[in-house]
Length: 511
Image 1 (cartoon, rainbow, N blue to C red):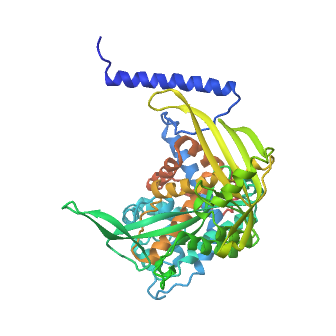
Image 2 (image 1 turned 90 degrees about the vertical axis):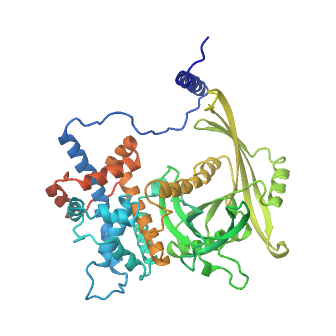
Image 3 (image 1 turned 135 degrees about the vertical axis):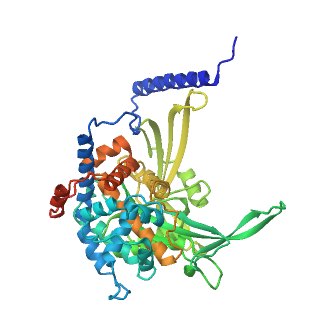
C-alpha cells in the first residue's frame, strides 16, 4: 500500500477539520451557545465589472473620507494656528497649519517613512489630488521641513489638538452609545517604541544592559537605549478603540540622586493627572493590567473619583487573596453561571475586602474581587479534534459586585482592556509605523508620534461611517486605506463633485 503524498495528507487534514467544525457548530447550537461573530476579508473577484463602476466607487470612498476631514479640519486648523512658529516670517514658504496637515496625511495614507512620503506624495497627480481635496495645501512640502519645525515647537500642543477634537465629540454625545456602566472606559498600557544598541541618540532615552554574544563565544553585557511610551485609549465595549493620550518615559523624569530611571508607575501618575486636568468631570472607568494592582494606584483612582477594574494576578496582593479564599466559602450566594458567546462562565465574587498598604500598613482601602472561570470548545489545529479549553480571570473592582452588574463590569468592561494592546499592535504592524521614530530629535520624534495618533483617530472615524464600514467588512481596514491612497495617485476624481463638498458642513454619523 503506497504512502499518501504530502498534498493528499493536507487535503485529508483539511477535510477532517471541516467535519470537526461542523460537529462543533451542531453541538453549540444544541447547547444554546452562540459563537462570537468573526470577520474575514472576502476572497471573491472584483464586485465591479466596468471602469465606470470602479470610478464611481473610488469617488464615493474618497468623498466619504473627505467628509470626515471636513468635519474635523476647522478645529484642527484653528488649533494649529495657535502654535507659536519660531521660524523667520520672511523666509517661511509653508505655514505651520500646512505642515501639520501634511504630517497627519503622512500617517493617514500609511506612508512607512519620510522618504516614502517624499517619493510618493510629491508625484504630480498625487499633488494635484491633494490640492483638490485640501485647498489649504497650496504646495506639498518636503518632509525635512516638517522635521525641522517639529524639532523647534512645543509638540505637546499637537496632542492638545487631538484632545480638543475628543472634547467636541464628548460634548456632542457621539460616544454615549458605547459607554460601559455609564462611564468612559479608559485602558492604559505601556509599550516600547524605539530601541538602539550602543547608540544613545537622545539624552532622554532609557538605558538597560542586555547580554551580547561575541564572535569568540563569550557572553558580555552591552548598553541598549530605548524609548518607552504609556498609552491611554478609550476602549469601548463594541470593540472601538480611540487614541487619547501618550506619556513618554524619559531619563530626566527619573530619580537622579538614587540613580533610578523613569518607570511605568511614575508615568501612570503623570498621565492620570493630565487626563483628570483635561477632563475634570468626565465619568471614567480605568482598565488596567496586573502591574497596577497596588495601593498608590488605587488611592489615586479614589482621589480622582474614577472607577477601576484592575487585573489581579495569582502572585499579587497575597493578603487580599487570603481574604478571598476565606470569605468565598461563607458567601456562597455570590455566584453566577451564564453563557457568553460560545463560553460557559462561572463568576464568584467577594465584596468589601480591606486592603492595607504603606508604611506599617497604615493606609486602608475597601476593594472588591471577582473571579471568572470559563470553558469553551475549539478545534485543535494539529489533530483536528474537538478539545475543551479553560481559562481563569480575576479583577479588583472599585464597586461592589452583584448578579446584575458582574457581566457588564467584567465582560463588557474589564475584558476590553485587551483592546489597547490590539490597538498598539495595529499602530506597530498595520501601516502606522509605531516603532519607526521618523526623527532622531527627541521633540520631533514625539511630534511625529502625536501626528500618527491624530491620523489614526481620523481613520477610525472614517471607517465607522456607514459607507466605508461596508468596505471595511469586505476588504479590511488596510485594504480600504490602500484603495483610497491608490485613488489619490491616479486621475479618478471628479473635480466638480469634490469642489461641491468643500463648501458644505457635513455632519458625522458613526455606526
